[in-house]
Length: 273
Image 1 (cartoon, one colour):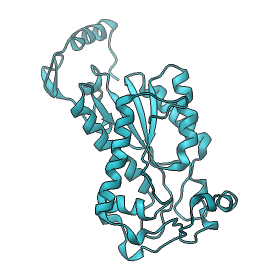
Image 2 (image 1 turned 90 degrees about the horizontal axis):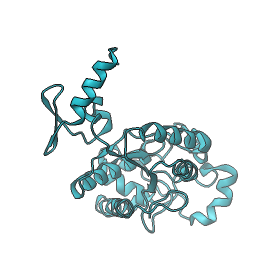
Image 3 (image 1 turned 90 degrees about the vertical axis):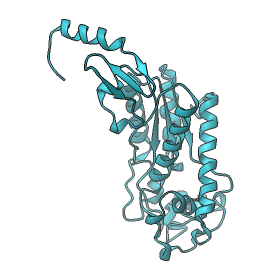
Image 4 (image 1 turned 45 degrees about the vertical axis):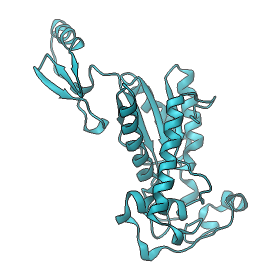
């Protein structure tokens, strides 16, 4: 922040407030040059955003085990990839400016605590983080949507977004879901990673895990986590995964989130459908 007189600040604001926009650029008269409208929050500068009121897409993932063949940031990778495509589509289909925020890469992953590499911050802390994130971002962003890549985060998202909407903030959330998907590090997630990040999939380590329906596994998982039902940490069969199937599943995730955002009718817990 540069110190200066109130008059200096008022003059600067009066100049930049009326700066015209041409195409994908905003002319910042205070500096006499065009400023590119950004697509990612992390690559932006405050100067680029000062006369905008963008909508913000925030990927929310986890850092947790995904079997011997997928990386710890699998959920975060998927949420980020969905958010990137989603924001690009929304920018192309509307006059609004949509930015993608750096991902929130830690979530509520207590069910995976039995495996090395897992870092869980729990539901309460995640909910508080989401609330404070949105309270701050909504001072300059017109709208905010969390794109969730981890099922364990749902309780925190419901709690946080319910409060944010009660406070009058235009926030919502959606999940990277696909129909008939297995539960964890199996066919679905491995297929998506083969599509978006094939280099990180350890092909020779793909091994079937527990393929029983999640409803049957839940009682034991509630007592002892994923380790209690799968020593591999896999719920499903990654050996059947393909990049082509991943492309289809990924498109389904993006289409569902896009539809929910276009309709923008959050339910009583802030979820878009």
